[in-house]
Image 1 (cartoon, helix red, strand yellow):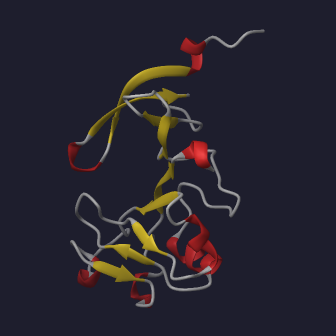
Image 2 (tube, rainbow, N blue to C red):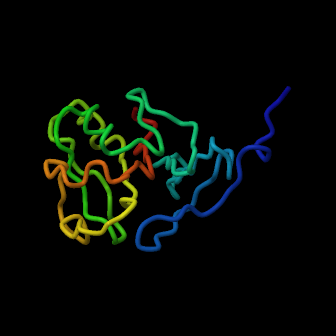
Length: 156
């Protein structure tokens, strides 16, 4: 049985931060297996793969998936995690694993955290600022992985 591209792959625009639109395609669109692939306009290679479908079946070799809690990420990493404050276009993006076990992902894979279940009393974690789990105040607040992005997948 041959694979027909149209069954599982559909061209489309992939949306990013600040309203950026990139050419690409979806694999298994609107399913727990959805992948959003951004392509290079010059040579059509895949630049980035985004996973952000709630309930996604994709999981990293470290056990990270959409919905993994920040608390669990800290446990996996073994050191505090630094991320951007919530409530703006680049909010929740992890920018450092502080030389912990997950620091091997830096530059290869991006992880974006969704906002806490309740942001009340967590002003220090809002807006365009650097935040860290060294302030344990953010732990236990329902912060979960909302997006996993694989950069330059052909190089991995």
